[in-house]
Image: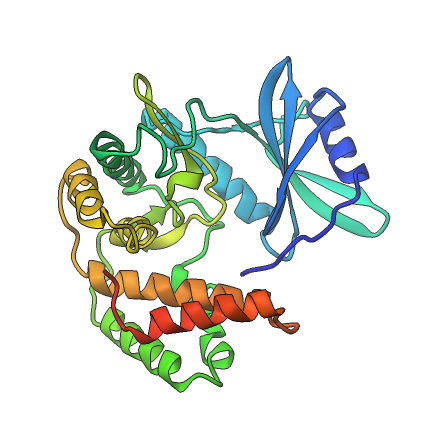
Length: 300
């Protein structure tokens, strides 16, 4: 599901912070599928997330928190959720007739690494793959109720409708899904589903800490690797990244090419849904670029 929160009254974060006995001041960070705020609890930075119930149910949010707790218990470095003063991981915040689900997360230590950072290089790429391997090793056999199977996600279900006016993209979607229909449903479990540099922090001494598991779902573990690689497929040093990331992961999973093609399609579908009300000229340009990438019919 892909929805955008465009404007959230300040009364929502104010009420949410009272549930965690946090400092009353907050800094709005971003609005995307959720509204994100930087807040302070006992003097330490945390992040408040406000989410539409239509996007994630309470059960789905609670399952995400259970996954984070499981990963931490297995020694995986993740930024976990913090319970409210009532002991709840998810609080329903009501303003008027509107409801948003609130969750507070720890801040991940380290810094966000971008291509212009001196830390952007093989050690980071290796740590990126190794972190994925640790997440997947811990996820095997862990199956909390509440998170969905990737085939049931709204964007996949609605793909024929969203691609109705684009025959080439529709044929690519049909081809990719047919190939995945032939793939065995093994080596699957909960995956992060968006494991890119914006969703982890890196410290040369402490290593890599993952956060933002809001899209975690049941999928092939290989899809996590494919999604990660898809974010760097346009980089000039892409082969170096791929080699180091797969070395950190420990193996090259099957069907990476097909799963990367699925990811390219997924990004297009998400934007088609987000811009459905009528794309602006800038959004139309984004769609044109994404369609061209889908029409290439390649992952890597």
